[in-house]
Image (tube, rainbow, N blue to C red; front, side, top):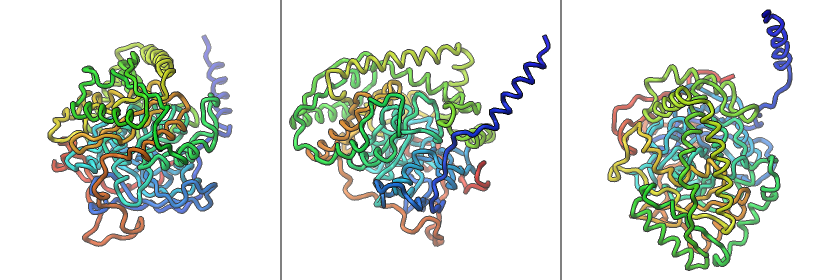
Length: 532
């Protein structure tokens, strides 16, 4: 059969397509100082990849005026180097702002720093970054968690009030819980993910980490989507701020369903975490909340998240898009990552190597329909959680059943799925179903924070925020840091440092979750022009 007609026809189609205008990310008109890496004195927790200073010249509103915000190192900020915590992206400098960064800037915020993270978001351990482990502000022998550990830990520094992270399985909520701050994973799609490094479109969430319910509310107000296929589920504009204006003096009328499966034998809960959780539930009851024990059968299918994530990571490694159209990250970022993963293969963390290999084997050994099957299971799980929420305002469960990794807790070795699985046992399901989930620092065990996670119906962020504001007013957060961790920028971004305060060498630890003393290879500054 002569195929020349097909070739000619397809050639005309593609040529015509390439001449059409496309939806593109924007670069906000802003003053941009790409800054520099921090010194050890400025960043004792290893939470920051670089200080910077980016501010819009003409903000659209003043919601976040004067607020310093930290963004995770997978959220492109135009003209500021971005690495995703990996040597694979060393030298990449984006030329556009991702959507949430643009919205922060237009709300008057200053992007003050880029935060450390686990390599390409492939671990929750907090120690797989090419810059080394991020330390816990409550105990520096332990991990801050991941993959958004830098964002959570940075909130212990003076002047840093708000941080953004990405969450595909618990990467906002676990480090927030371990660092004793608030972490919100909104309803799937409520906050635009466009332009950020995507791992799997059905799991991708941009989340907010803060020290107060009000800071969560104002940030969510600034970055939420303008529209969505399901508008009836979203709160009216302005409702987030209104929800935290008048916190109640008791919790009368709030109905909570404690998910029994969140502490059963299958998740291998730590005894201290379990005891702290039950103690916090008693305190909630003591100020008026109704707490009932409930069973949620869908809680046991969080492993569906692993199938979806491994498939997405496999596509990512091959340079294939994990999100379509303007919602995806840039072609320049995809090209840089694909070539960097090949060139830097020997330097990748064992955790990332294992995830990429598992994803490759999944796609090679099992039919393509396994992904579609996982998506159908996800839809059924969402319906099941919806039904379970019908009788309660929120489900409540420990954010993670284990305390922060540390030398006395024998964290699993690098390159084992168990490393990621246990901390995510209670969080991953809600990436699969898309329900909003908020961790609050309401308990402690052995002096370390224990987060309680509250899960709501789709679009009920305003109710979650109102509840959080009341908890903050009535119970307060626990434990409190004795004093803010030393650190924070002590000079303007980009200002020369003295010989005694030069940026430290930033390198990966190959040891335990918080051991920074092993042999390392320094990672230098970007050396290539802005990517195109």
